[in-house]
Image 1 (spheres, helix red, strand yellow):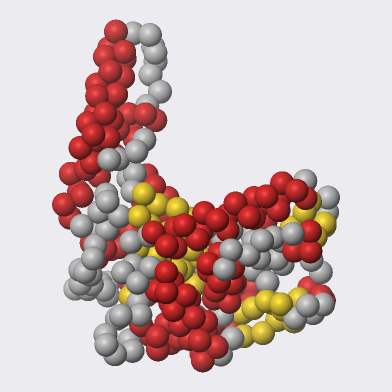
Image 2 (spheres, rainbow, N blue to C red):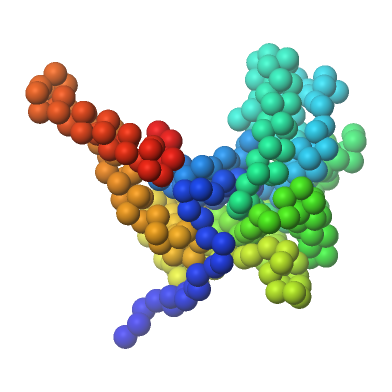
Length: 317
């Protein structure tokens, strides 16, 4: 008897190796994949403006970065003794206004560089629900606990999401025509929107992505990785969730990572990944006696392994 509906995936072209440059933008699930890539020492940058959930916020980040928007006092506001920007996550918020503005402008520069140079750009969409700040009618990336009465909540239509995705692709391809753009929908459910509303939102995202990436000639506008479907249709059990029953747990993240690896990462990197894993575990090891001859020899061996990876594969520790 078969108690699972395993999703069969095929390897993609232009796979990731240790010469690749990666940029991940979007929902918190992209953070999980970027942590895996960073652990194995791939050249990866993730969410320079922090976690962004809706496609319009991601589109704004890409557009502002490529246009080299300069953030000023007019783009930030003070709330609860911290300075915030509606374009960024609260991770970038700061006590000092000038620090926030400086960090925003630095992130704009680094994002433009990554968008222009990355061989692979992974965009994870979390929700089609958006919040418009009534005062300016601007769609925000994060509400920063500003009272909800100051926003209008709307659901983007499939056509609006598709238009946003298509604009992202065109903006990126104008500066980096050879990059592989990979879209995915976060398996994290936004149940605060409501169960039905979350399902409607995810359906809009999936439909819109396929409207764009499936346009002939096939896949020139992007690729789709089914992280949402793996979670919903393969791992159909609450044992794969954290205690909040919303976020995938470590087992689920590892499982989806294995599928991503199978599809997108060149199998020739596997021996290097194994060597990196050994080193990472060695670096995390806490000895009983750090001054013992055995441990000093262990550290010397670890240093040699790191040196070999740096010289042979340009892996940075």
